[in-house]
Length: 126
Length: 215
Image (tube, rainbow over all chains, first blue to last red; front, side, top):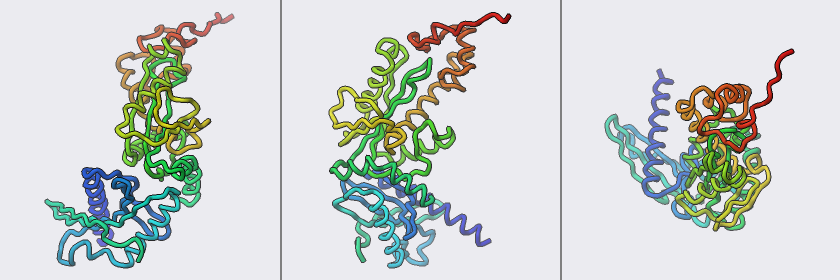
């Protein structure tokens, strides 16, 4: 029972990530990487906005009863995203002069999907 | 992705890292497929990236199995800043020779890009009429991630075209060998003679192998 609910959550999550990627693409961002994972953490989307490298956390909720999705990006989650970003940059070996950490919150109901893009949602260093 | 695969991909991006360190932003890999076949066009692809391609199994199109190639092609198109194909027909191959025709296809792919890259990395040859600084890398499709990516996209596109051409020119088995010289293809050439898309300047097309009567 629980695993079925979990699978549903994963499907909603990846649909939200795809929607977020399309949202960014429509605004001229280039998607560089999806679901970057490493030991330190993970990042849902990595994109290029002009010459700014943007690490994007996609947060989805099916109901607002437990608060807005953005509130689910805890300090712990932020530090996992930062750690993964550090690893990504090391792998890249490429200098980006500007880096940003954004959150895209997705409120998903059976019929509607509402995306909110919060730029510089948290700082590159804690 | 295993740590070993990550290290392999890291090594595969050595040329890219060097280019990024020297200040380039958009890197373009160019490669061509279909030099060897007896029929059909030569296909080139230009892929522009702004960051490494962290794709499991990314490698020279010749060593990736077809099913994985199709998955990789979709992932490459998803992550690339721009992707373009360039073709040179069997007639152009006959008129120019295969090397010149593949350079023409590469140059067409480059000019079809939606963005101007800062640096071009190309397998083995120099591309004519290229306004961007280019590095020619021997064995680039196996040593350089963005060239490997270009080889995969080109391979998938050419294979798809040859499979479609099988319907127009049935009997040669293009859907199986994509125009390459296989026993099935040589046998069909023997029986049917060349069709409209065969490269007339390629030996086996006009000179079917001699057959000796069995003693």
